[in-house]
Length: 505
Image 1 (cartoon, rainbow, N blue to C red):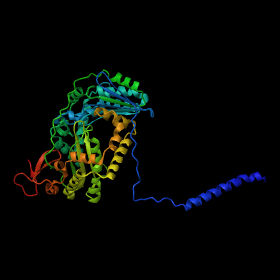
Image 2 (spheres, one colour):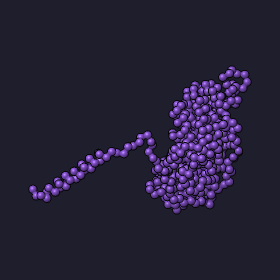
Image 3 (tube, one colour):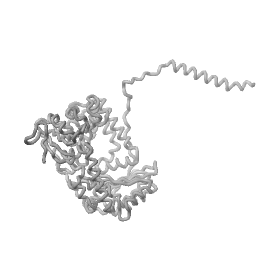
Image 4 (cartoon, rainbow, N blue to C red):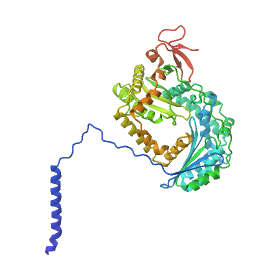
């Protein structure tokens, strides 16, 4: 065998020898110790850089925002107009939601089935939803069917026919949904809480009744449409996806430029006065093994100067599983599986709410402990660790919530319809990071008022009324049934046995 044949073998042996020596050296060098008692260091979240957008407006007042995103062959369209439930009187409750549901149930040229088949053919979907302030239409499709999507969307938005059979079916479903909802203690608590918090303001009405559902008919739906479906009724459309700004603008103009403007009247905004003192209201749920607690006061709108400091301090208090309320009421005391607090920023008024469910036997104790935590968050600045955790959670979730085309479109729409700064998305992380401990505590002191909270408790009233009364000495607690009707008070009015509430007949 020639000597050259030994060269690969020698080279291989040398490599093995080198690797063996390196392994021995590595084995002799101990790995750095890891302190498992401390959480890993988390760096700051990078600011979100929103995609470029192009804004425009049609002569009829309809605003347009286009966001080009050519990564996927998809298009998302969002349209909102000021046609939310706050446009309605109490006896019209449910009409706005019925309007939203029935938009896609028929037009003069399409049946509900044909609309559904058309959206399937476009590789997408179309539907509508309603909130207190705005009715929103959402449509998605393959970008190759952009023209067909706009044509379909214009048909359901501008020309709903409200077929009688679909109207009757929706009303029957609404009655069934109302019955099912009333079996949910959280629903009962939220309905009463909003009535008590907002008083005569339209935000007070959050659910229909059997009587208001009965009043819904084709004429009422058409009247609602004629009154509020106007291009200059704070109407805005956001188009995001695989489409050029020029083409998106042309499609909006082609299908919506003939939409006649009108004279939308602003929704009524009567003044809402906060309660002078803490009040507790009860909703009967006989035999319930637990109590549902909802408490709070007026909150902040998105345009409030202290919006971000309050967002941060609420996160510390009850915004996530890392909060004080969880650590105390759940982990230390074991009263509940979950508890949270949050701000609901409607356009004109906000509400701030703490919600939880606890065992019946500890209802009063849990509520008392919640008040202790509310007092604490007002009295001293949060710790640096709490501040860091709150900011990381808020900024991280904000950025994670902007991963899809539809989510981006939704956020651009929110920016427009709520009158927020154009750089809102770009500066959101920065605004959160800029909050100091003193600013957060100051916001808590200004907007959290445990001594003036409205409290709604749904549960077995006979078991909880006397202990709860100790938290509002000298005050009378009103008792409601599941339909919101007053059925008694505690202490009872008039002759009654101690410990029993007086029925109202």
